[in-house]
Length: 109
Image (cartoon, rainbow, N blue to C red; front, side, top):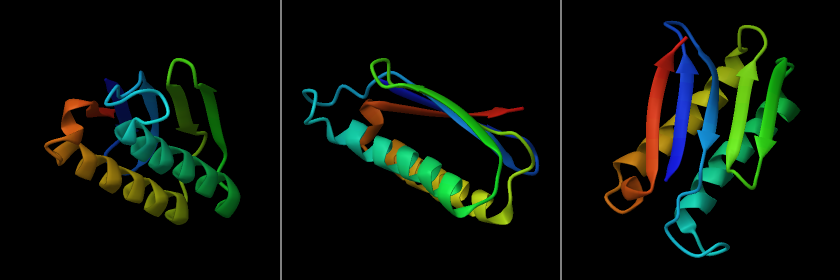
């Protein structure tokens, strides 16, 4: 199961972490993992390329592990990108087929 944790406080998103693999299909054919990975990696790339936010991240593709954090208060653009990520992940988590393979949690930090 792909476990995703979104870190936020009362005002803003502070980052996220992922762990594991969805396991909805064979490696290379796992559509749940591909969909979540696309959302996550695209968000990370967009924040890095299109904002001036200071970020830190560590990833280990073999373990399906990503740790992503904002070093300072996220900009308006980064906040919008994070909201978009969360929207996509929440929709996957609500889907009857996808929800078997993904666990989305929020943690106040």
